[in-house]
Length: 589
Image (cartoon, helix red, strand yellow):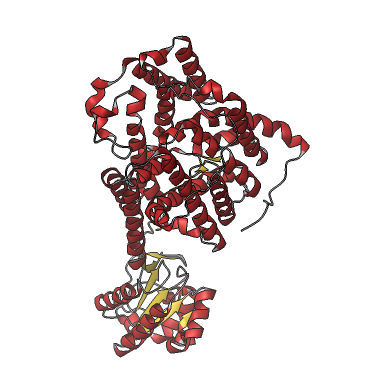
């Protein structure tokens, strides 16, 4: 974990770019933050609190100039659904527990950063995130039906933030004025997003909606408005330190920590790559953790990086991380001097902002691409999506992570392997199933494309056993190891058994191309001597002349017509040579 960021500090020439970018971001930030405060089950002002202290703290400790920390839709929904599980809570307790979630998430991130465990997020693959985000987007949009259309909660008593679908059965109970305002705001945001993506659409609908509601006194017709927004600095208050409360909130905090960090680091990596800038995940993890810990004492619920905001930061020309510091100050200024103007803002407008902003998370095109790339990944997307919708956000995410780990273990337990042969007329050896190649009946070359460890050691033994069983003339099995990046003790034992078992059947086990770290393991374990230094080779071409001395040359002369090795051309043949097959090149896997 670092102290102050070591990224470039703002220079005078950066001020104009950072100032303009901060105003652009703040114009989007203020209405969005208020909307996400409502989504979290809190008052809109808590969204603004989450856009102040966490933003300022991250700007001090963070490294990325693109990461727009603050409230995000998925995190806000997780807060709402997680606190719903605890039963009815009075507003003060609900608000305190929301801040406690920020504390727990922040502490988790700081601890992981100190342990340098940011890499753990790599185990949460894109299929899990895509499936979870799509389901969460549907749930989020569904949860906005009530405020968007003005449906009375009493008509759908079974509805909740995690189960908003009963409202679909009561669309006829919509409040006409609220529905008109909400649908009009949503339509404007969709059209503006397509035609004028650089416009601060949320700010425009908030200003327009507030002015219309004030001028026509729509609140008197039953249109719900934000009402009084407390003016002043974010209030200071400690979150709960009750261990029983921590235990009750732990599953929700864990889900927020996983999703929040995974999405944040994905966002910053994508934007940094465009500018050819490096990202230090553990440093970002620490900064995000400190931002949430700090925010938990100033009215904030969990914060992370938002994709749309971060993209706006990049497009607006942010030159340093001072952009977000200034944006946080603009939000603070709105709390100090502009709070009264939010009074007439219709909550239907905020619901429209939420519904439209989460629509991009429902990425059907990406899900199709993932499925085409790998069918098992497509199943992971579908299973995570279905589990999140059917079981709940926390449970769905857990199902997705477990399934992704099972797929990972399954792939590593049964890694890709290929028997190799020589492409005629070349010194190149490729997969016999993908190329027209020539193989030696007495030498079987097997390539394994994965580290060898306890999960796949038995697979390797069985693969070689089947190979020898189907090739009765084999005298040498050459394990091509250039794609084997590591080897554990179980794999070493498996290879030792193979050496002994194959020798009993009159077959030698050779290794070809082991990389440096694997060669070190072979020597430290003693397997180097068990196999024999003369049977460990750098390349197939280097090994071929040695193999030619160990195989049955009589077999080559009397029965073989193939040219599996360059030295085969020097062997006199009694059988008529078959014409060499025409090489057929295909993509290698």
